[in-house]
Image (cartoon, rainbow, N blue to C red; front, side, top):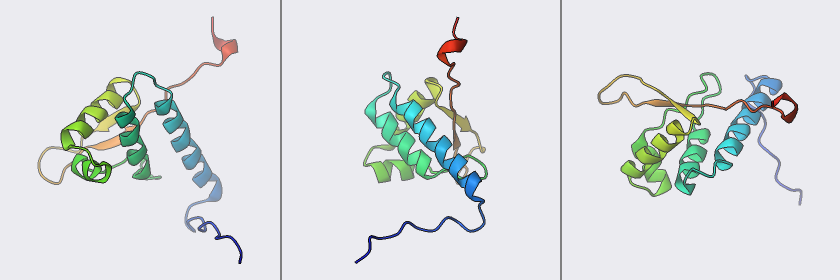
Length: 120
């Protein structure tokens, strides 16, 4: 019996664009995981947001209620973890208006790291 094969790439997304999107997502998750000031739950929220990222807009639209349900947390805890991610510079909120059905969207923000030779 042969091992299961990986799913085929999406046909309408060029392969090189797909890999750049995936690379950036993992680099962002690495950045978040390396932040010792963040709580472990903040990383869990970031990971779940990364699963919802839209490759065309680079926005994640899940509601805090959905995140809370999927992570087994209260909505207030999810909200606090998002605030941590924003405060630490890992996440940007994109306000989509107020009212029912107009949830915020979230954009991962990668900090630029200087190479050792660029430091003073």
